[in-house]
Amino acid sequence: MSAKRLILSLSLTFACPHGALAADWDAPQDPFPIYGGSYYVGPQGVASVLITSSKGHILIDGGTPKSAQTIIEHVRRLGFKPEDIKYILVSHAHVDHAGGVAQLQRLSGATVLTSPAAQPVLESGKPDRGDPQFGALPDMEPVENVKTVRDGEIVSVGPLAVKANYTPGHTRGGISWTWTAQELAGAMQMVYADSLNAFGLHGFRYSGDARYPEAKADIERSIARVAALPCDILVSAHPEAGGLFERHARQANEGSTAFIDRDASRRYADDGRQRLEKTLAQEAAARK
Ligand SMILES: [Zn+2]
Image (cartoon, rainbow, N blue to C red):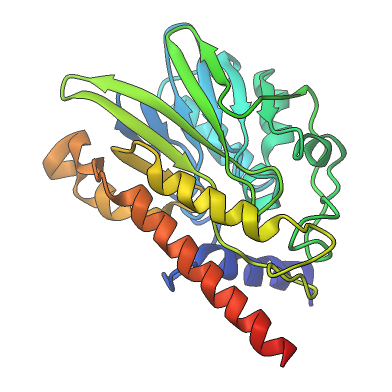
């Protein structure tokens, strides 16, 4: 399979945990404010969120290698300076979320923050051998200035405080990020949810695989964790999987409160649970 075709097929698989039609990762999308100084700056198929303050900004995820320039243009179009981004946070070290991070780190000078399991992947650009999709993952440009955060650690820039919530299972090093955004309508709990789909390639089995024996237990725990997160506004790593654009469509009439959906994280986690059950059933059927 050609690299382009492989990436397309991965894109469709990544982006369709509940059968939603996947857009191309880098389909154009205008940037837009979400709530209280947090902005959507990614292309359509892979999320990137800029959390702003007068003391500097935090960016979550860098999209594909092609997305990096788009994200920088979006940041500038919103009136912010890329060099004011102090930290780039990563959900998980796959090319559709972290492939643009090396470029974004260079352009901003930011420190990149991830989990200990994902740090070597970002630093080397080489996929993790324990990744359920190992063998089908392209190399990425190695990232400089990568540091790790502990589970529960708060990343601070001026008044901003973004919490790392480890959510392994889709990869060994996945993190969902949470913070509070404030505006006149009140303070909202924001969730940037990592991918929760149990998807293996090259014979990887979530029901038990020496390459990543904890995969099933990890993703079950992560699904439960995301379902239980205090959540007013959800952005998922593939935004259409969390319903972001349906809410964005109502923004012109309803304003930023259009994004409030307190059940969104639980539904997103339910989709992950269904995907896991399907994957386990397929693995059981394949063994018969
Ligand atoms: Zn992924």
